[in-house]
Image 1 (tube, helix red, strand yellow):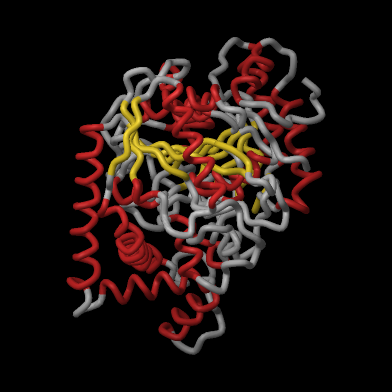
Image 2 (image 1 turned 45 degrees about the vertical axis):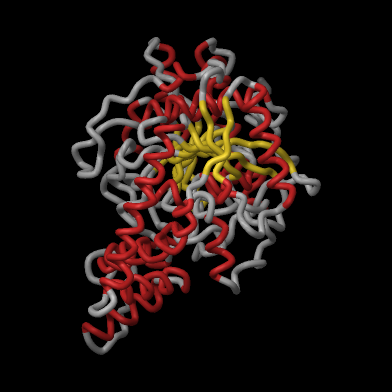
Length: 488
């Protein structure tokens, strides 16, 4: 490997080079930091870069490797979305409300990666408090898509997806509330996984919508995704929603054929307004699964068409409750020029939150208010139950359900900022999985005629990640899109 650049290097390739001593973690980390320094002015994938910490961690990783004590992620440079707590490193949620906030503790996922001696090169930009589909809602700056710097990377995990696509790090962790890992992975041509709700601890993740949020990996390929999930999955007593399961070794699902697997294609997921190139790519991907031996059949999930409406009642309702803690008293931004306590509270929230966060807080407060709770929030919960049962019934017939990840390729910066409804529709194919609590993965499936990535989504039943990895890896290995990178 040319130690001056980590372009194209996967985690498992880096592991081989590190263990054979062909490259050190410090060399690999300095290469990643050099690339960040070279590209960040154009891509803007990082809120914070941590060179001193990274070099210190890389040297410790090299000591562990020399002692024969390496794990799969030891010494590999990575990034964390900036809504995951990092002790001693600012965690801002890309919001003025938390600008400069330094947590006194690590998120569980942070600690589990550190336990393997992973190397943190920085924190990834996001839509403020993870509310958005383009990373244009960051209070600091928008992130740009490495495939076309005039376009968005998707969101809310746009910084992590762009950083991995641009090879500024070898992998990143994002969070997915309605598609915020899978949609940017699709738009940036990388692999993004939303695990089963509760499989990965949310302790230390700054809450947006607690019944929907889930942390997952963004990587260059499916094998890397399995390696990272191995490191972060598993029960956590600090998270009351954490599942009491012993996760398998997900890499054991790789390299298997698809014969005998039954795959459903819901007709409702070919939505109105879908880009024709996305539809063609999706149908070609489905045909490839058939050639690989899977049994493919059309099916119907009629109630998932209500998922968008359900989501935009439930998520803002939970957001309005979670963000009530930002009152200018305990931590975060505080307006110091107010005349009274109530005036200080109003001014703090007015100045600390951006327009999209305010919009969702007001929507949620309205939905939860007296006289409207039954009409909106309670009804949305009832429809959520119907959607969940519909998926459960479908998975009695099928091992997986597939669709496009995003109905379009990456759109231009500023193209949808004036129309929130059009922006919300960007997640129409991903958010049903969050409503149902099931896992989903997006894998690259093609390029448009403009050279923009297209993603293919695979959904399985709760805790069906092994089947999901089996399908995703077989698809990746049989397609022509694995390893394609933007020319920066």
